[in-house]
Amino acid sequence: MPIAKLGEPLVVVDSVNKHYGDLHVLKDINTTVTRGEVVVVIGPSGSGKSTLCRAINRLETIDSGTITIDGKKLPEEGADLARLRADVGMVFQSFNLFAHKTVLENITLAPIKVKKMSKKDATERAMTLLERVGVANQAHKMPAQLSGGQQQRVAIARSLAMSPKLILMDEPTSALDPEMINEVLDVMVGLAKEGMTMIVVTHEMGFARKAADRVLFMAEGEIVEEATPEMFFSHPKSERAQDFLSKIL
Ligand code: ADP
Ligand code: MG
Image (cartoon, rainbow, N blue to C red; front, side):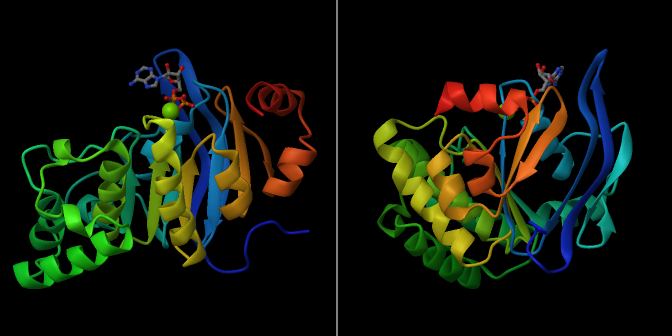
């Protein structure tokens, strides 16, 4: 039974290898993410999840193999790289908002600079996005005046402002106080339901069950298992996955 959604491939990771010195952090990684698919990446700390995300966004170089996004091979540098970054949204564990800009400016900055949108259009769109993630009433505050959950929702709105083809999220709720996790997960589930293509590193199994089409389990730089959430959580095949799940569930 095919587990990928039918549709065209949006991200193709083909035989990717990456080393940090002697450490082989990505070992012959192969996977394809189709348009509209939601892929959850889980695995022990140090297994290469963040490195894989950063490679897909070209924040890290790779040693061999290829990564293709929407039919285009990842560029090395220059204007093509800026275009790629506009296509791929990234949400980090540590919000990464611009501290000296208001919430609204955080969102309008890239559309105005990179997409040459008018300030008026960018502001209108930003307000719509802030509304959607439930923080429109905070638009004129500085990031530090917001709670962690609110800041992360602003970060999601900021990535949406560029109309990306894909959003990568690396442990987007790991730095949040427990009572704020759900407000961010709800936004993520909403995005998934609307058909956004997402690669999400998270240990939030509720999100994986609700929203993921596929779970990738990584250990020691390899994709050890790839399955639907139902299959993965009820019948993990490998000993490493069984062991990992026994510790987190
Ligand atoms: P994960 O996100 O699954 O916890 P990472 O991708 O962050 O794993 O890291 C994979 C391995 O690569 C770890 O052993 C980590 O210590 C190492 N690593 C990550 N970034 C660097 C770096 N910039 N330089 C050297 N080693 C790194
Ligand atoms: Mg990580």
